[in-house]
Image (cartoon, rainbow, N blue to C red; front, side, top):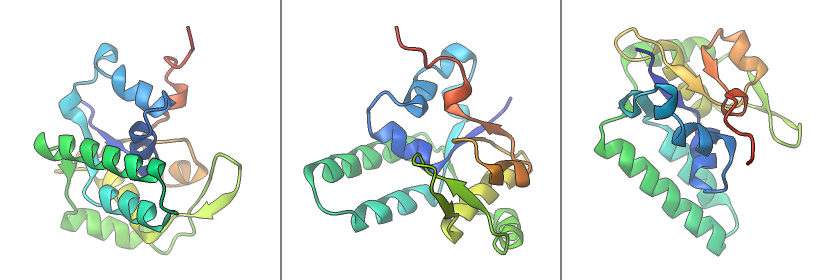
Length: 162
């Protein structure tokens, strides 16, 4: 059975409750044969998101988004679906830290993966007990460079509008 790790952006997109591909991916997982107990988040993903939201200008939207993130994270905690940072993951992280990995945002602007985000990538690569995760995230060149097993929610084929 494959296990899946939600990327940080996918976790945020789910929290937006805006019918984005990541949210539809999550909602249709079971009908596509994915057991909900096989979908994890990295132990560091909540910190990455909440830290970014703390830096955003205060607004009702940001506060609601923060609450949504906290609610979703708590569901993963309650179900014990948090991928911890193991020694093996930390070792893998150390190997990819020096790599100049980049991603493109929705506007096509290129950004460097932060050291925190690289820890999420290392978690997907190493997995738990030697079983790597399928990373659920927007497709990026860095994923190919790392030879990550990837599932891009926008490519799953369930995102057509009625």
